[in-house]
Length: 250
Image (cartoon, rainbow, N blue to C red):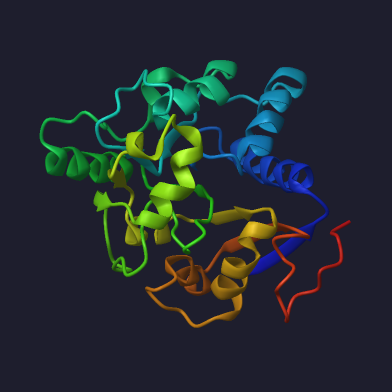
């Protein structure tokens, strides 16, 4: 893994956006793997700026999101489809039919999961996948003890994840208990993985991911085995690393 430490979340987002921009400029038909949550927001805002100010063109690109809550409609304020529309897609020239988010209202969820896998394969696989990092080490909604060979599937959420996500809902009781998530095996087939982690709350799990053993107890640790994984951290998230310089990147 390549590990780069920046001063703050804004710099992390800017560097991540630059990596995505290089991918799109080198291959306008790139397949982008996207994530939701607060951590990638600086990256998305910089991509929007690049599109508006520099003409970064998304018209031939396509995207696949990592996950979606089961039971939430696409227009629900806390659905991941709604997040992606309001925070990114509505501000770019990416074609709506080329943006893919799992269907949280699918009648047959298993069929929908298989169809999502097939759509990724039909698109040629993901060129660059952005990832966040759960406090318990999850990537996507692949909770601890998820199989490293797993594919897109239904994932029950742990109590830790439910509590962590409760801040986005009126109460913890409103947080869905299950989600559709891209599997770890699917993520690992991405040609490049880009994990972003910021803030002191992520310091302990960042150290486990990078310096601990590769273990299903910390799903993100599998990125140690990816041939092209980049970890972008701010100083607070890197604070417990012992083998990585915490000097800000130039």
